[in-house]
Length: 250
Image (cartoon, rainbow, N blue to C red; front, side, top):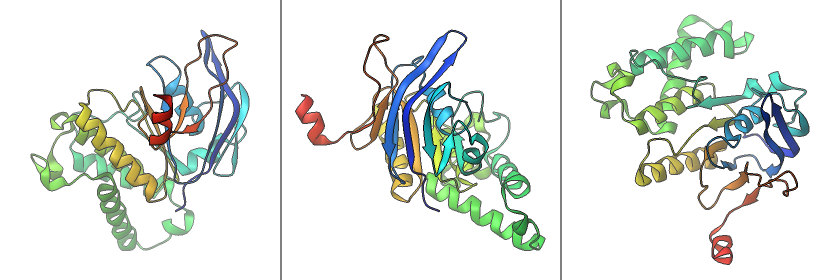
């Protein structure tokens, strides 16, 4: 499935305590790796949720995969997925990796697939579910054989990178065109963070548009900042950060 083309012009979201973010403008081609950059509390997660159809913006307009926001939130939710978003995609520590995967595959069959697919024989649907799980695990780089107890490993026994890969795999079971991943910097060493960015680049290279929340974006991303110094500050604009750009800024 092709990734979603993401554009925004003057996008803003105002909450009870003021603007979560404002003046966001970007244009990212399908299969882009988009970094939402800024310190914690700067509206990064709100922007992630807005662009994936989970929050309704207060001003501006965005087009995601051909659907206009904030008018067509439900349409965007149907082809987007989230990973590692606190309070939204939390994993159950006592459940095993296998239980999480089976549950997500079952939910996908019942609520995510088309009516035509639901009419297929049960054996065919079970085979398709196994294929989806295997595909998602491979794309997320999570090898169950490397876990302490294989698929029976409880989430609480996973390392941070393994837990993040599992969350990504669960999101990929639905074969989304747009994948949003929150808080990449949390509890990761520099080497682990580089490993996770490599994973997200591989997903983008395979065609999925990826939105990733971070404190500092690496090179090679379409980057949009949620930081505003004051009300008259220029609107945050997306830019493709390359090695040449970094050298010029230095």
